[in-house]
Amino acid sequence: MSVVRARAAAKINLHLGVGAVREDGYHELCTVYQAVSLFDRVAAEPWSTWRVETRTEPYVDRSAVPMTNGNIVTRAGALLAELHGVEQRGDLVVDKAIPVAGGLAGGSADAAATLVVLDKLWGLRTPLDQLIELAVQLGSDVPFALLGGTGHGAGRGEIVEAVLDPGEWWWVVVPQRQGLSTPAVYRHFDDMVPDAGAPASSDKVMAALDTGDPRELARALHNDLQRPVFDLRPDLRNLITLGESEGALRGMVSGSGPTCVFLCEDELHADTVADGLRYTGHVTALIATGPAPGPVAE
Ligand code: ATP
Image 1 (cartoon, rainbow, N blue to C red):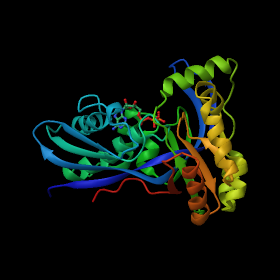
Image 2: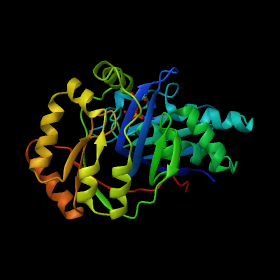
Image 3: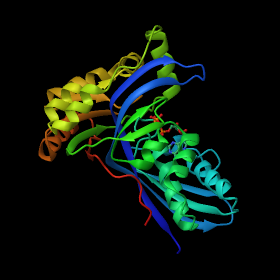
């Protein structure tokens, strides 16, 4: 076997309830993730050392992606090798379509895809629960990225349960040139909400998912980080208003931003909203549908 590949899906938080900061510095979350069809691609070949090549779509800032050593995919590979006590290394090519530091967990998706790709390349057949343990060490969003689909996240987001999501949801995704640091957004949340208690419940979103009706889901979408993100990036408030005036059912900041996502009725409607946004100068308006599957090694 020479090259093994997998797709790595971006995620949108349909619900992001943020609670008080914990003693370990993380925030208690109640979140509902949905993986969507905006994919990075990870390909791996055996190699004597770690080597990571990143290739990017024009709207993705390649300079913001760390080289081999700082890249999360190298950490993922090293953890997998360590778990099995093997000496293997790999040559990894990461094609990035997910904006960096965009609130879409692109790095987490790459890490999850790398675990499944190297597991297959090295013939390890690691059980899913062990891969999830490695994912938890790599980051709060990585366990969900391994599973894909739609999931409920508790703890710092790493305790994930699959959610039945029979709908087909259409999104317009508008990336930004300049990313936002997730820790900086959480710090700003703490400044703005010093008395945060338990995270807001996701019941409304869970009920809306059951209906399969995008208008219901549009009403239920919730992101506690949107206010601090708007405070740091006031231009995004206008973008949300613009997308909604172009007909989107609802616009929202994705996770810790700054990517904005717009829920639409169906594919045709998403096309129309994306065209409207492009016409008003937002040249990059991508269309994605969810739920999308987790990484499968091929
Ligand atoms: P999250 O919502 O999980 O914080 P995000 O979408 O805001 O994620 P990512 O694109 O996952 O942010 O990247 C966060 C940081 O991780 C980047 O600023 C970058 O320095 C670092 N990083 C390491 N490896 C990667 C990778 N393969 N792709 C993107 N970023 C990476």
